[in-house]
Image (cartoon, rainbow, N blue to C red; front, side):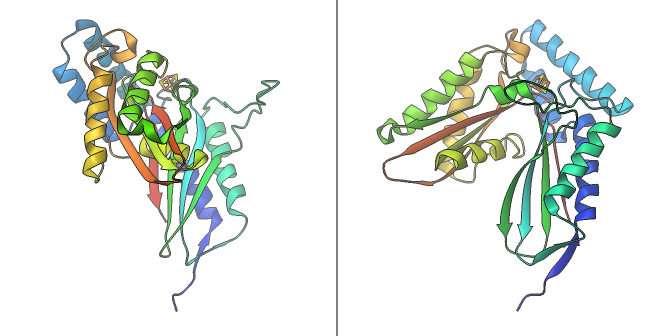
Length: 282
Ligand code: SF4
């Protein structure tokens, strides 16, 4: 019988606090790398200037510990909990919310959560949105994603017809991203969830934006679709900040799971050029 490991929620709170501040100030290395590659192959002078401004912003944010963007996002947490973990010292969701609230207060990060109808700002950036997965083992993996409103708004779930198939999916994603134009603050990382059910497809799409940029799906069929969609989006010429250029998207990442025989759920979630996310294992 496997041993139960106690994990203090106080350690989780502290981890969330540090991840939220780290994500706000320091862009993930792989995102920066992909943007540098985009710069190297870019032909448009305007697009080069846009990317150059992005690089300056990244440098100042990192050095001075200023937010990478004024929209510091809602806190989205992917929490992978080993089934042999027992949380102690409090309730895990309270600890996560405390970590987010403290980070946004101490870091003077903009608080973005509001009442959807009155639009009254709650002033604490709460609640965090927590997606929990039970996995084998006795570890806790936390991914913190600071999701901005511009890129999030350029998302959708569409219940396709099963007969739409591969071609229908490719066309829908390409059309959607071209219609999105400059709104998701390109160059973007496009997350796509295919299958499962209505809500899980959306979670897959968001999770897909957090994969190492440009790392192809291990499934060759999906890797081929990722490449085809990426090429078609970039052929649009929308470019960095929507001012024209070769790179509208840095990558397309697809996740797929089995679905009902009568359905074909498709979700698209976009990450903007700062794609702030950090992770830790406890
Ligand atoms: S989409 Fe990203 S870069 Fe654009 S405003 Fe929102 S957080 Fe900032």
